[in-house]
Image 1 (tube, helix red, strand yellow):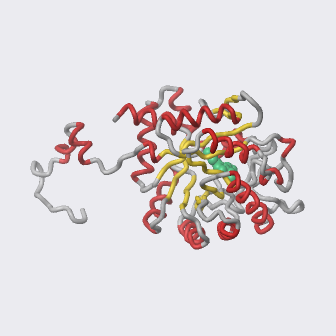
Image 2 (image 1 turned 135 degrees about the vertical axis):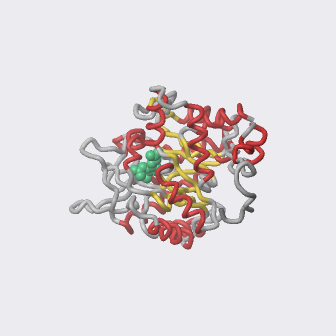
Image 3 (image 1 turned 120 degrees about the vertical axis):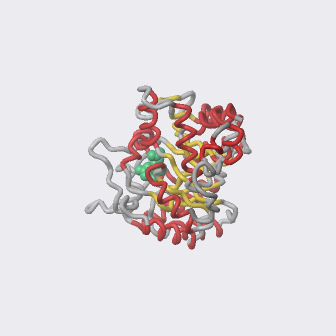
Length: 339
Ligand code: PBG
């Protein structure tokens, strides 16, 4: 008990007094979650009137741009102000060097332009990483012999991708690749090209995690051979000091905001980063967490509405500025009911 006055023992110190009615509980609540904290991730596919369910993520669909626009307008009407776009790229366009990632007329670039015309107020986060565009599903280009993901050669492509996304109108570019030094060169090239207000949300502490499985399924980056091992570039899940080091580097290179990922199993990392750096810090409740929750809901092992709000509130309690969550729409709906 740091600074609380000691008022003597029971019955003077009845903790339950402040829990005894909704009004007093609301009055003393330390954490509040609002619709403004929610960022909705969306999967985009080519074509028209396409709506494909993602098997491992019940309720989540890959949408073609025409349906994406409708989805975003609806999300906006619920109060959601930012979406994060992820592309599903046809196999025929995937290569070893991910040229499609910086095609100015590519799927995501087109989606951004369309959104800017049809839903101009929505904030758009565009992922900067090559995994949707490479044949092997790694976030960078690889040395064919060793399979090692090449850092500096990958950075050159990431810069082109980031510029192409900024040019299309992305408000925020979010490098999720974990190459060294990419924030610095992306920032430099954005400045040179006149995009001084394009924001960078750095996936600064992104762990090599098994919780991304359903996402890889959704964007079709999983290879049938085996689980892709990204541990030569994503963080080791045994480490937290290393995460702080990553965050400080990304900030010094020009990141505006940080992102920690996965979410709930890494709240300690989130809290450490929030305590260390005075910058907006976001958390990603990732696909595996979503899938786990849904499995429990579908079996009636957990109460859906209560758990959605409880799980998202834990991020705020740990200090998150906002949360990327596949539950964003549903949570927005629940929040509007509860106020
Ligand atoms: C791609 C990327 C991944 C996620 C976001 N961007 C997958 C990965 O690193 O393999 C995961 C998101 C999720 O699981 O919901 N760089």
